[in-house]
Image (cartoon, rainbow, N blue to C red; front, side, top):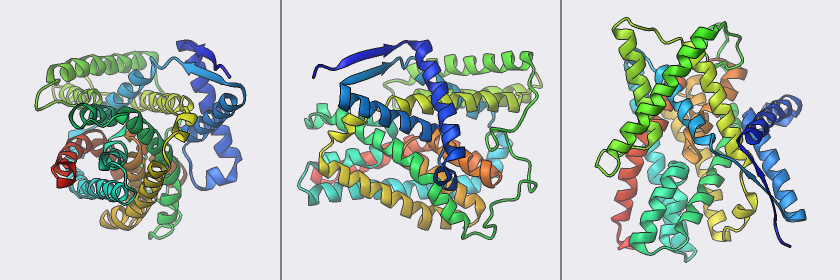
Length: 404
């Protein structure tokens, strides 16, 4: 059957994304299972739409193409808001937690690649495929996967590396959003506060309680949009300037750090104080729309074309992530409520991406109470340190004789 193509332009795609979010909210509040395991609303709505599109594709050969021109700017805007709300004094205060969490992250990177390579060898497939189903795509995401797959094709002659990398990253994005909530809910029961942190124990930030009402004027909103636009523009310039050098970084990392520098510099000279609530509201909007677009545009039939060995490796990786979060991340971070929220975040970017981690943690804190430590540590580690450490770990593995 000849496929029937239906293309949605930018505005139609934006409408579809907002409807997906509303659908996800309705699902989570109506389906007790989704609410019980605190599945993020964009994940619930986006996956349902992706499954519906899979049925339409298989039954009628219909392929709906979305205009994704807004997806990357929305992701960059989200990271800009993370940077703008990052207070350097708070980062210094959370330095110990950040260092300990980074140790947990490095341990996961080493484990993911070991699992991928060992399983690939056991099943008699190219160990490079096992590495692609490791930290490259799971902790690294689509961007890191695309970059390394190009290297694998050019340097090692591994054909179809790009397709494998993108499929693995997509699989991880879905699983990262699904397992974070159940893992955290299980862990919270084993803390000293099994009902979560009391809401009145500390004032929640706007990222922790995204549904909290806020008084924002039109002037403040315009000023905040201007700050985000400056971060996006300057961040892209810096990323382009660093391209091809030893200090090359993904664009979203540059955008985040421009946000940190901009907000703290303005506050230091007393010129302007960033309005945290407005920044957080726009950040939550960008995050929700980005995730909705990313998940509703999944072509699940392409995932189905993955070879069975690859699906086996990815399934084992998902189980290993859940166990690692429960028995390593949770324990070394203190076995308390904050540690449980951190474990949910680790599931998010350990299998998918930092936006998934934030969505996981929001789903937990919205229900059980705030966790300042988690929202301080995860964005910084997931958006910045993970890319640097992951690159070093991947290069270390590529030095093994099996890749000689």
